[in-house]
Image 1: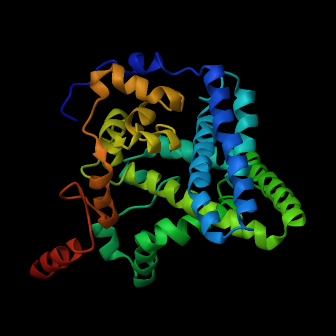
Image 2: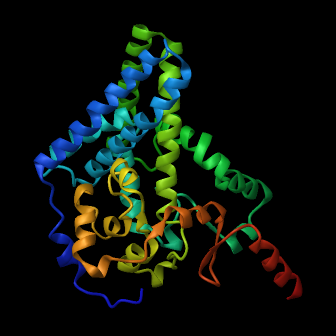
Image 3: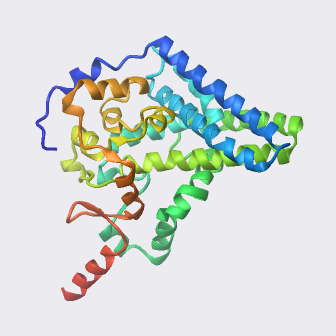
Length: 335
């Protein structure tokens, strides 16, 4: 980063406290519209499925906002009370198909290791280096290519993560994390079972599946593009720096205002990584009031280049596509 470091901890601490009325208002303007949109989608089935699909777009947008609230609760930044964050996080976790304590744990690891080449693989979109890929067996290469294919990652892949993968805990999970998975699954089974009895399984799937497909795809895209952009930051642990990982390895994703609202200001991701205790509704304020945080924005158009990034070129310190493998193989043959 070109700018000198400053006492950024003091700066971000000014914004790292929630305001209860703003948090409550965000719950109301996200949860109520989501429920209303879900009901309208169900009623629209009697008119035509084309209308249902149209309504699924804003419904998915409100689901993304619910996940942002869930995300803030995981960081303990949405309410002053730790208990209030937990209770709200548990509720929002059910609505977004994500177990609270399990995701909170893995996401905390992500924040502590983002941009660290020696501590990859937990809570992130896994990225291999060119050398690692070339040395990997064929089956690992095949799995990695499938996983990093945008047609998989941002469609069925993201859907599977939320609907299926989140139904299980990781081998390293503690008792609280495992219990959160179990109780989230029970709560989902109860709510889904009730809705199926009420409106039928066909109607339920016709409403819920498009919402999930769009919301999950948008969520994974946001998570991906916030760290897979040009230029970004990756270093080995010995050289890794938390401040640089936040400022250079997390994007300022500048979205149109309506999308910024639906995504809960998560585009100010560089600030969020410096201080996850800042509630989402104060991220833009922190950015605007402090010139030191006003880095080069990543526009939506420029972010589309991220679709072609596959590997980290450790020698050139850049994300590259599959075409870079030809150059590396050619060099290896010449040696």
